[in-house]
Length: 170
Image (cartoon, rainbow, N blue to C red; front, side):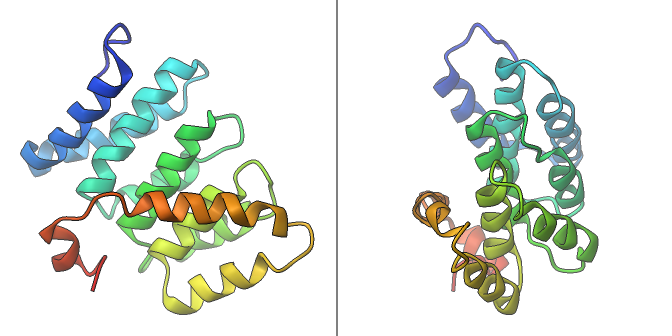
């Protein structure tokens, strides 16, 4: 996963596999690695952070939501931002009022608007999701709606029985 010379797709698949075989203790280390690598300036290292975020999107760790919200920033590569938004949303925002407030503030920044919106739509309450979608009726945000639709569509590329157990799908 962390060897930058390996093919990116192989490393992403390793991250997905990690979510199935990791212990709870290892998953806590994955949370730390998301923060560590997503905060780097180099795109290759940010990709490692996105890869580990993919692990968390397959096997969420509720304590990770705040850390991933703090890691979501405009300087990140576009795919990294999307991976973080997806992982935050799958992890959920129940009981994370501070994280939710930060994500709503991010909706004003065009660089991180869509990943923040994805996180709020997937991880927030039905009321939160409705408020976010309604915000895209604004003239300045309307152009971002097709990209948000694409992010949302791609967020459901993988389901398992664990998603049903967690309530991610019904």
